[in-house]
Figure 1 (spheres, rainbow, N blue to C red):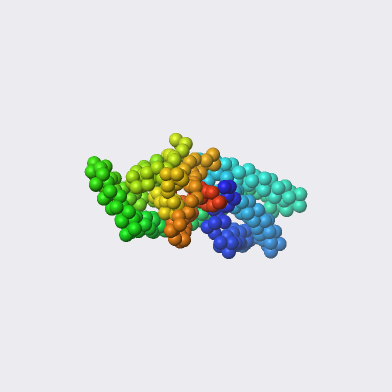
Figure 2: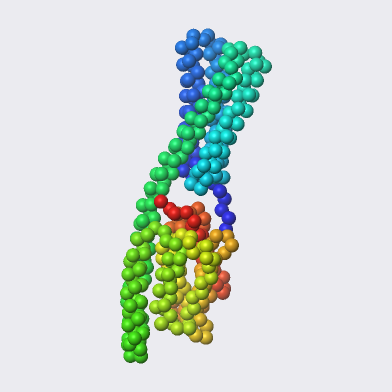
Length: 352
């Protein structure tokens, strides 16, 4: 369940964009800028070429180094999780890297006796290089945040569409002739046998549908809220299937505060009922449990119904797509001869 970390810059920038931004920046700062000042100061051609060569080398090393620092820290210390630590480490790393480059280049200037390069004091040279490094880093961070904002905006719109689809699919699965026939048939039987229980059944149905309509409007809900929803659903199905259907919940208390897309558990429990037989002698058992790796698993024993139709897989695809919009962790699906298991990552940070 481990996924390879990837720099947000690699996910948001194309290689062409990265190449042109870096190349243009180095050319403007490392070539155009020293050429302009050499003309203003009246340097001769030889001095101008040497100065351009030195500044170009310095700018290239600073730009590529700072770019590497920024992209590395975007993975190891993401802004969203460690803002203060990210800022402090980034500044210290940039200053230290700039100091090393300044010492090396200033030392080479002394060694090669380029007096027109070493006439500027080391302190001034280091200060200017540090300023350039910070500007380079800010440029990368600024473009990154712009792309992140644009990407999150697209994600929010897509997530809203996915939630509408989820609510539609859930309602469509619930409000269909087959489901209504079974529900009304159960209700009719209860009216003859136990009018008080029939009244409770109708109230539970009304509460379930009201919650269903309210619930799907949210992008993320807590696992605790999701458990309340499937508890209502389980109560309705328990009246119909009795001891032929068992729902087990074994979650760490801390995991109940985590987040997940709404109606995810309800859809998985519903799919288990839809495709498997239920009997007192061989009950369908759906188990919802925590793992040690910040995942939640929904597992049911396989006992396919003889009258079951081949599923389209839209429900599972919908769940996978919604998770992809709010986390980089994957949804894992495993099916063997005995069990069908879906592992859902627990989301610890609200998606905006």
